Amino acid sequence: MFHFNRQASPPTSAPAHPLQRHRRRDWFIGSALLFSLIILVEYAIGWSQLLTPWRTLPLSTIFILFGCMAISYTLRAVRIYDDFYSLMRRRFKTTLRLSILHTTANVLLPMRLGEVVFPWLMQRYFNHNIFAAGASLIWIRLLDLHFLALTGLFILWLVQPSWLWIFAILLWLFLLLAQRWIASFGQRWRGQIVLNYWQRGVLLIANAAPDDTIKMIRLYVWTALSWITKFIAFTTVLQHFLPITFWQVLTGVIGAELSSVLPFHGIAGAGSYELALVAAVLPLGIKATAALAGAVNLHLFMLSSSILLGLLALLLRVQRAND
Image (cartoon, rainbow, N blue to C red; front, top):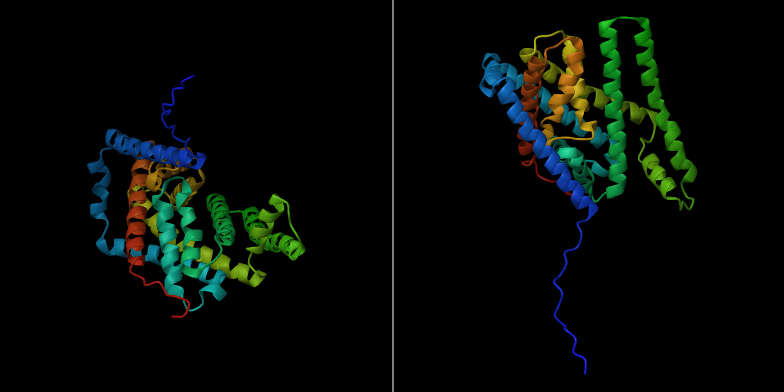
């Protein structure tokens, strides 16, 4: 008779899901950027010296700048409320809570992980489809990028006023009408059986496009106003710590804001935010240490404003559909 050794083999752990590995990598990169920034600032400038100029900024000015940030966040909520008016009607406080929490999460989490908060809260608060909410968010981000590019053209006009830049600005604004052409894809395929994965994705995004040109213009106006109030606060703060011309300050602010599209993004933007701002102003003849000091202080203002507004948003009661 044969005897077999039936000793159980030790259990093997399942391989980590690719998404989990990516998340661990994102948090590792984000932490590395954060600690690198802390060490770099202490070595190159010194934290006490870096923070000293805050003492010369009047408290009343800080309150006004925070008010600009609050207005900017509110205008972002108005944009969402306008976009989803039939869904969010008479529930603006919930929309405001959703928008601020989404923005705060985007500021604090690395690698744009905060973007998933928007479709999640849309489903939780308004029972809206997650994928449809994600498609709408793509349109919102396209409006943001369009206005940032428009601001870039405005900076070029400030540097060298010319009718060519005016023409470029008008042409860039005219391109907003292209959304009607994209939305036509949704109308063309609506009611048809769409099996192709690529077609389903395009259809989802096309269906999320604004319903008409007037609505697109309204959404763009909310976008522009929210960015303008934010730029007022950011340029004022940065120019206090980095006394350079307005167009140079605005260039640095836009560079910092575009840090979110970098392939790496620190926790709360630490490291990547400063790197993008410094890279934007270095070609303009600004010293690296001065630019770094201004970038860190601007980032601290942005973080403190976002966290405070996020905490205030938690005090807003979630309104149900029958409220």
